[in-house]
Image 1: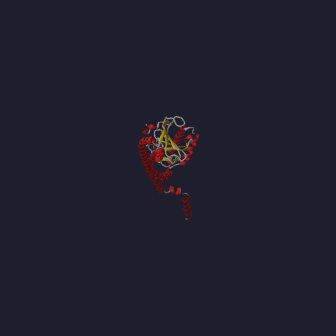
Image 2: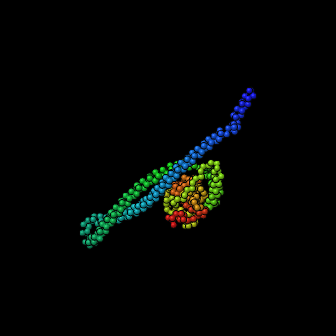
Image 3: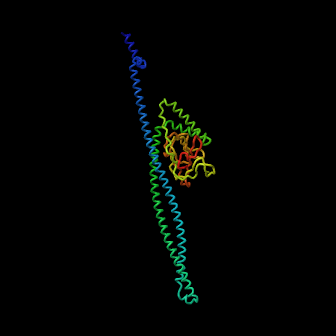
Length: 388
């Protein structure tokens, strides 16, 4: 009896110290545990998938709102540029009219002064003067010719004063409209900043190894000799990154983002095209892209949908953004001050990605845009029908 009790106690301690051995003795219990673990894992996977889809939906909604807001801001900037032009023209016209009025007033003042002198000539002086009757007759004839001219000049002066007053009223009205549009633009810019922050927050939750990507891209930019070399190295890095994601897919990495369609092509900034593709730029070199003169702190948007491949400073181009599109196309956007995009982000056509510099210290900020196909510059008119 004591022997059996000893065996029972030993078996009990073995089952505690080695549960796997105990499980072998109970296959049904082991199967039930595995089923529970599998069910738990499936729930976790489902929750992660639902969370990702909700974030992706929220991000897509935010992007669409940003695109619409970007269109509104560009339209507002175009209107402001038009109003500024009208104000400038009116100010020049007013200045010219003011100068003319000064001359006219001076001439009329001289005529009035001469008439006043004639009026003040005493009759006695005319009688004493033997040539008085002749002079009086001559003066009368001259006055007969001068008075209509004086009346005509006075009428012209009156009309110019009316015109100056009208121009002044137009200036006041245009400046009032300008201030109203500027306040509206400022309000939209503040709303856009909030959306940018929201997009960044959602992106942070969806990004995978983003900091590693950015450091790698910056290292690539330091090694690149020129723009073509940079894009070639970025393409190779993209291939390596895709292979890494594919090899790690079985390890439950975050889902690979969907590809954003190119969408309708649009210029990255509203403004005046100063240099077109193939023309000679300010440095007397043939341009591989186009230079657009925009407004101070003007909004810069993605010209087409795609993936952000590069952001930051690169050689003489300053701050640039490179966006990868479909069919081997890339957009290079240079001359930005603030960049609101990060490597790996997916952007839609018209989605805000940054701003031009503040032009308080320079006449007008300029943005350089270049479209490339398989690494080589091409005429943007192949995508932008308005430029054809």
